Image (cartoon, rainbow, N blue to C red; front, side):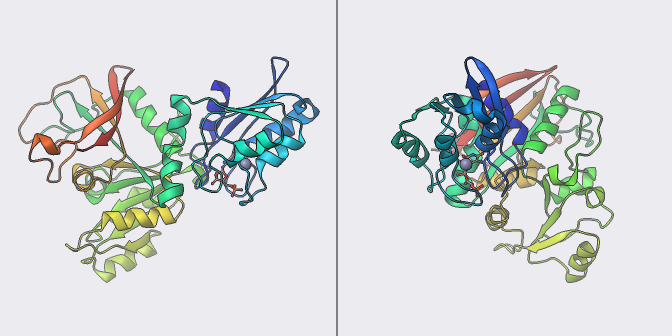
Length: 361
Ligand code: AOF
Ligand code: ZN
């Protein structure tokens, strides 16, 4: 199963709106076939593994990270192929949250006399947390990420922020970008840092366009510069604007290659919930919000953040005017704070990464 999880991770970021699955076929203690999910419309993980195993699949054991599907979607049911190949036993790491499958895959295998066992692991649960939300609600799973000093600052009072975390933590962010479907930033970040917002390889070269996350800028008044670096990068850039966006600027941004979408909220700023619904409708399942503080604050205030990755650099910055990662209105009383559930702490080079799921009340 741990090999199947590694295979699923290879596919992460290239399968949405489908889940990334890994599959391994074992015969007489030896791996005879491996596969992972290809982009939508192409073959599922199990099919790749069965093709590789050929006749060796007969009497073999299949390990897959997700319950094999039993329905006709863009591709035929994996359960039919598993049964036809003569697989003797199946172990799967998560029940498919898709209401069209959800236990039906295991039932189809049982009905054919194949024992199918559910082996729940923390990794397989985490692999499908985004898919589980999106397939049921149509909304993307929102992951917030920021880096701060031990005293909770994201820059000095003069605005210097390079770098709070070291190289290994920044490489981890690159992996996250590759595995997620979209990166969301606020206009403040674009104006301050002119970021490229690309997924890059270890040498710093941008990955191919189809591996790039969709870049999304929340830009109420359409202030994104037409010369912004992200508009030159491979992949899509969506600029979401509010009710006050000057039509001339919208036209200029479209001419510069951005997709401009209008989401007028009550206060003429971007309606963030509406924007997320739109991103979900585009098939973007997992989105990473990288800041800055305004957008993270606006999202947390209305409960739009599902998960956080907090990188902490072992340093103290100080200064009452030095900014913190989450602004917005925030909690007034300790009754209203967001508790982090299922927290995890990892050392990454000289820094720490804390991951958790915000929960209130
Ligand atoms: C599997 N193996 O590798 C994946 C599965 O439109 P389709 O035919 O590609 O089906 C998509 C659905 O299949 C998706 O919503 C999810 O329920 C399941 N994904 N199932 O057996 C795979 N990616
Ligand atoms: Zn399938």
